[in-house]
Length: 210
Image (tube, rainbow, N blue to C red; front, side, top):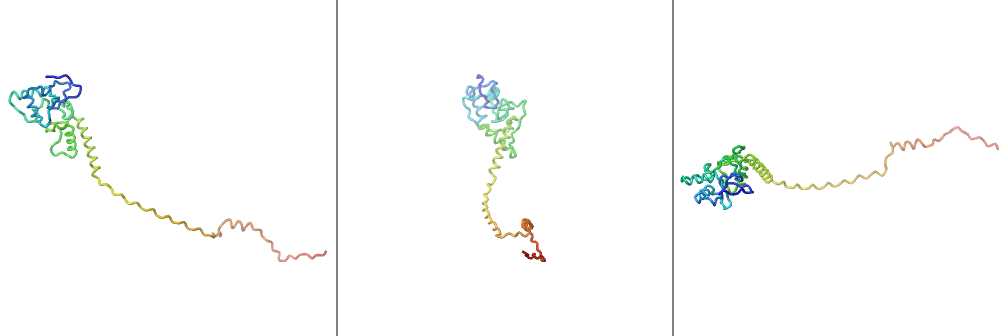
């Protein structure tokens, strides 16, 4: 049964596509055989009464129930929409996508995958899952930030260096009590200003005739 459009963003519990504007059904209002198959496809999560499924996944499950077939959980043929961002639920038919590297990933690729797994938990990442480029860039920024923090925590702490004791100040040398003034210009100037005495060796005083 199709429900009214929800105010919040809704995701299909099976293929993870956004169903805000798509036909959707409450899972527990479907046929019990369809519910059983949907639960089998999504064994890693617990489906509640508030979970929805898109009409494409409902039609696929009904077709497989009627033909007596059963696909493996996570297989592309068990999803009504195969080109969906596993993080935000956007359709990837006309958008750039990035695949989640699972085999021999680099350190950065592994950190990105861990961030995506934490974001979509308890849903698990499968080999057919992909991510839209904006969600990939956000996961990459978070992964780089976490890697830089881990590198900073692994660096050993530097031991504090002992403080050097300040050197004792040397006492100033005492000034000499008597300073030499041989070459002092003031002394020479004082010597020049001393009045000179006139020596008259042959001078005789006149006799007193009074």
